[in-house]
Image 1 (cartoon, rainbow, N blue to C red):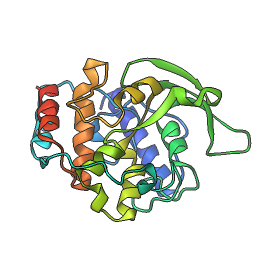
Image 2: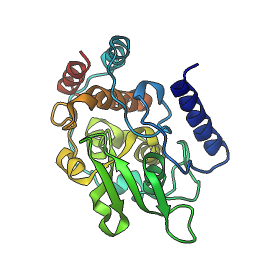
Image 3: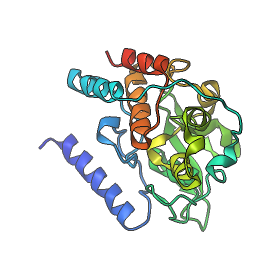
Length: 238
């Protein structure tokens, strides 16, 4: 076993132990490939680069159900519960006493600093943004510099069918770490509610990983994508 493999195994074991004990990891490991991170509890988003991995990604994308985009009528953020409230029930980190945003900052950040007296509230960290490749020295005084992106946007989900889901399922979808990535705020704002045919990460080397993660979320929740989005996703993993 190589040293790199050993580090990866130890990092995964630490994450599992944290989940079993109802806590969160306190340090971030090397970014994980989406293909080896189906739970969403490993940090970051590593590029998908090898032929076999791209083939696996294409197979996942090809299996996605296709549907026409529906109306956005009736959508509002509260349809998915309160913003970042620790109220989900069926996803990792649920009901652990910390806001979802802080869970994700702790998962992906390095050199995490918490508010004095708190084991939840992240007030400073370093983040390697997977969308742009930038290293961000983040402080809560400029909170919006890092935003937690819904890989499959909530408004997109609403138009593709989440409006027919139970509130419990929508809250899980909105707080599932598989569907969440801390990223540069400007990139998240540029994405808005777009699917992959309308927006992709500026950093080209991460695009196959991004659409793979998008497909994983859609598969887990049985959510269709548009035909244009599936075509764009397949293009990124050629």
